[in-house]
Image 1: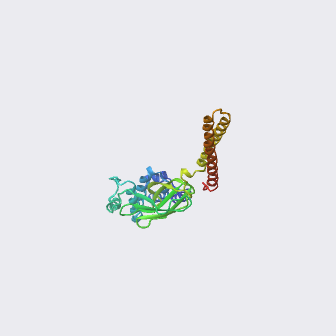
Image 2: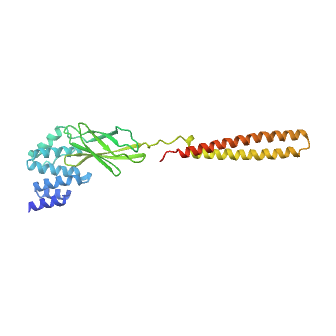
Image 3: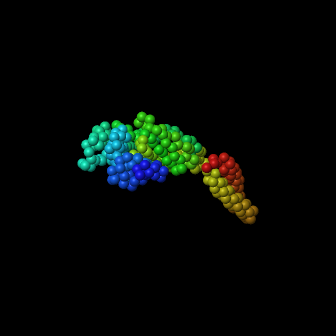
Length: 282
């Protein structure tokens, strides 16, 4: 019967309920297997309890090495954790030994980029791991959208290689610290401002702005041309020489303004065309 239960656990995977049920029934070997199997999929709010049962089950079976590692994980998740007074001193000593070694400290992750954060470049994250003296964390996982990468803990840090973001703007990265049992002892989030492949041009180099300016100058030149023509016609109709001279001077001045305006509008139009043709791809 027991062998059949273990076979089913191996085939379908155990749940937190399987772990608790086996422990409550004092089936420690089955409980140890079920609890270890359930750790990776257990929700964060239940994880400390599963570590507790796994550690006690393995300690009862005499597996002190794994039990001690599980107690360290329990204390990393809940530094204020205590064992029931009903637990035997033989099992309690492993828990207290883990606490004495400095296991009662929450895991902290601090990440930074060590490479240029640009949309076309792979990214390297340096994640500092602070997890107390027993150092239960063995691996750090980074997830950013569909991208997922991990790296083993190396001393007090992990170096994670992420693929190129593919687009500019904020890039949200979720981090998780796992131990040898694949339990998440801590999580953290990092937001990185990813630079575009081609930095945007300043506003004064916008082809649209140059085009609008060309249109405005051309419109002003057209108005000046119409005023010049009207002044020239008025000068022809004037009876008095003074009035004719004034209208003629106005006609000449506005004609010059119209000619200059059309030249400037042409230059602006050419500039807008060049800026449009050379505009970086998004």
